[in-house]
Image 1 (cartoon, rainbow, N blue to C red):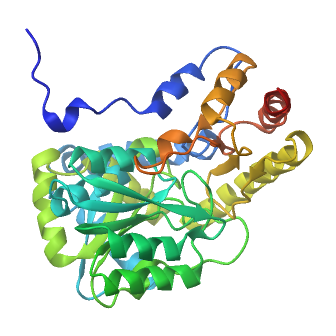
Image 2 (image 1 turned 180 degrees about the vertical axis):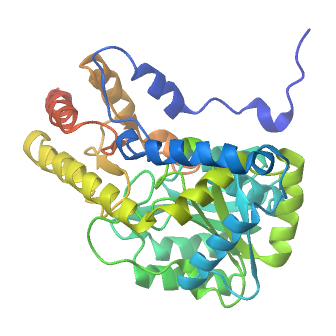
Length: 396
């Protein structure tokens, strides 16, 4: 029979990044396509030891249903941490969720009606774009530069677009560009959200992975009018497969998100919640993050140095202060997709930029490179191959 696919899913396609990632698994391929931390930094031995103890002492708890809001000791740890950072306020509530992706889905499900506009960075996280599209949103892209979203362009979008529900931003070491939204722009972003009475979804999975520069307070710390949804995750600092994240937002919105979660998975995986809490209370998370940052700093610097040696003039590369990614921009008239075909043939893969842009802001000049996963030797050889492709491509 002909399967009657729903209207909201009919035009949705698999993540291009996942498809590129599959191609990057070919033997001999050097891949800069990953979106994850390095497996070298997973605290596998510590988690294995804790898991044995959990199943010896807390098996019934770990294997039973839990409350939708999250395992209470872990939830309390998160609330205390957010309160220390000035992120959680008196009118907020916090829940533990199944990966940061769930925060994007719940925000869209609870706020978007068909035809509403969502303002996004251009470029931005591909899965966010697909999530918002699923709920019938019109995506409005706002250009980026080295200091984050262009605030004048944001104001123009807010002034001209009807039915804007929220602004989506990744302020720290943004995926895919690696740039950080400056403190001045964070204040302006919040002021504009107040002026035009829209919500802000602040997605901060990379914020603790800072290797240089000064930390910038979260947009949520400015939230006097209770319009910011803040979300972060343990995926990038412990391990991505645990799928344990959290969000903090006004209580009346969180109450609806709890209902949304009950319709999806009832509660976040209890075994992983208990394991994360045990890790947080038995080991020094700050020291673990410090070691991760020291490791990633070396890799970031190696990739930037190699870009300086191998990339031709005219290819611009961002210099992130943290996170997992660099973003390169080709000269006018050159295509990241066309480059991708050449680099894969040469045995190195990055992610072409076009899928990271909203429908109304096409751009095919950029490509994203991950530095956290490849080894130092792979970075050196991969950037050498990439540089040779770039020189041949631009001179062709």
